[in-house]
Image (tube, helix red, strand yellow):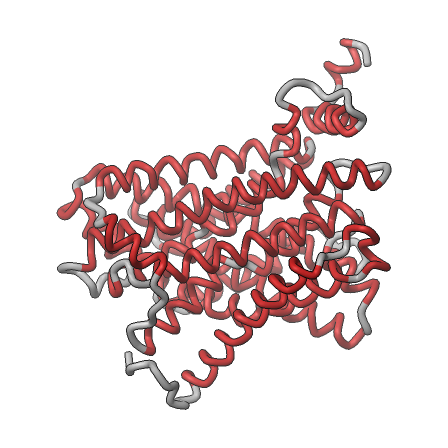
Length: 436
């Protein structure tokens, strides 16, 4: 490639070329960095405003007691993001496309409906989170804040016209901002590290309300749209020419998933620990993001409140872009024909505006959107497990027995949580759980 050609190529073109060189064994130094991107984008889903809402409530009401839920949810998320990424690398298709091509039509329509519902619940959480942050910062109505977030979302997604690499860099900057903010919060907040350690390794549900919150944490952590999105991001990133190159891509992808989702998991744990240390002792009734922001200033000082608001804004804006991107990928994949880009994006955005216009409490909407996501979650999880276990689809990359057992166990755990939540909602007493 000549220098003149190089100057005319995009960042994405150069990344693709370097990936091909690496797969052929002629990669540059630090070639592993070329494969960073898909999991970083997907990790935003694990640090979105829905996490803020559920984690603040968990820490304020139950202290460190629900940290184990965050840990288990993050482990399940890591497994399923790795499977989704592998599916995209091996098949060069995203999960929605494979569902459309491989499943009976009635099941495809059912999965599409569930997935669209999940995409709308995702955008609800993310647009509301960003709007809350702007409302607190600029003292503007929520609806105006959501309009600003929508415009910023479209602006960020517009970067994609120059290729996947520039968009990954922008999203990566938001991820770094959120992580840095919560590192600062842990320095400021007086965390009881011994209690946090016990909360991580001691499963407990203090009462029935804790179960609802635990399901919300799972719904905020293991995200349906992220499972769909990750397969799409890896399917277009680098074309492997044989199984050796596919194996290399899968290995790099697994490393990226572990690093990116470990960072996301630590951020979620930091959210719970900050809320536990700041609110549990004397402000356990703190349940709303706005109240948490207002209460942080007298308890931990203005710096803690400012850092909290910065992280919320970064989370709301970036996760809105990623959620909308996933929504349009799901719709395009299931229907199989082109839909105008603006129409695809507006379909997932509009319900969030309707909820806010109706005056629904922002934090309540966030928490219940996460419960709704948890109820929608088994559909893509089951689809990923089925497709990645089939040798006619995955060839030599079909799940091993150990991987299949872990994936089935994770899916069953999510299904069991959902069944218990439904029974609780219907008023059926659940042994071992005190009333909330």
